[in-house]
Length: 278
Image: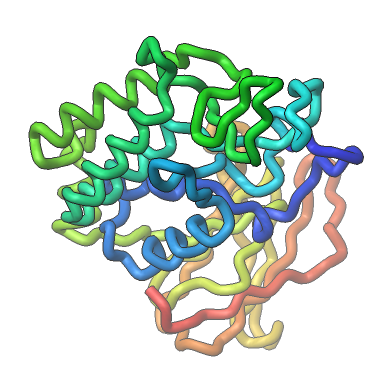
């Protein structure tokens, strides 16, 4: 991540909290009451929610360095990320999708309360103690960009959604596929830079590798083994699917591969365990 103090630009994926997960609901990929979404929203609120004089607001992500310093000094390549009014609009859309219209209306009021006297929505509002000498007041525009067209667009979309009584820009196709028909992914992807430890029972394990390879794999601890060549997807990814038909929770798939371009084995086994979670 950029803008962080002390050169701390690398953060583990499991340590980074942002509001982006709300888009899964907004675009119909997850239901608003999906337990994974509900748990994620609780974490978002615990880490990123800030109470302003007129209601709640949210920062973008933990450790964000894009904003004024705590003493009110201007952003100079590092700083402290502040509350973004447009995130209240995104949260309002989530509340509307969850059937909580009153909560969405309250967030509309909070979003509008962060505007300037000329009704311009800023990129960020100040969320620290007041610093009158720098014209920084809690909940009021900071020194960030203003107006922010993105924020005004979110405001207009929220007004339209409240008028419709539903998230107006939610595409119907994913709603039908994932919320009504409840399709699940056929594959569980595995990459050298993202290694899930488990594959749900009944799913295919798909290996996505950066170059052509011969995959050597087994489901019984190398008592028996199979070989499979990757196929070129045309997108710089070479994949192969390892069938899990008949495997039961607790069984382990072990695999390694040889680079076909140079003929060298990677010299390491990887494992993925079948579990009962769909």
